[in-house]
Length: 326
Image (cartoon, rainbow, N blue to C red; front, side, top):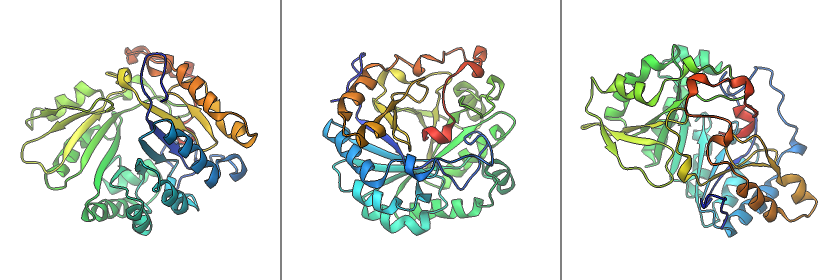
């Protein structure tokens, strides 16, 4: 087992396949002309499989593939097929643009749950956020996944003045569509111009919904990052990921492996552990993994606090979201 100094067992690994993406969302990617890592500096297919196998041998039960956009990687299909052979729950987070061409691979790998990033239900606003004209393609691919009995979660990063006026539209969408909409509090990362007045908090989201709908809380599982809710008569549901106002660190079981082979023991950790260099040098990678998790802070990477209104994003030492992997 991989255990930290607070007794938290880490059995969930997120692997970023690439820091490349076919979108240019401003809160994730600092600039349109972002410098992506050269292929030689990224984990190669066999290295991903080797590390994943090691993690599984140490008790990892779930692997999520992220990016960037994981499905733009040229050998993504081969990686997914290989990871699908491991005794784990395999899933991924994607922007949804390549689902139609990758669906046979996803199904054959046994993937049953997929998270789709979709921050707006308005085509023009989608173009403004992503700087790409792909709204209808993403919506169509969500419907395609649902037709294949896939469970779909839709990730919505909320920002005041941008898309908080669509909260009720997303809730209305869940009346007839069996998706789970997950509202995510805006989090600070390098280059995303975070300020506290852009955060739409857990309580503010509930306050917007409650005058119009009966909200029924759903008991979450031990390691869940989201607070879950249902509305009577709706085929879908909604959840809120409240990292900034009500974090869930006490039961954290997550580890993150970046596309360039660095292990982050927390999304907000200052430090990283270079597994790729050690792997290529034939060194003891497992000891590095365990040391990294042992050094994990109690909550929020030791950098954030629950009084987000007083947080100065400029003092946070971290990467941009796209280079970490969602």
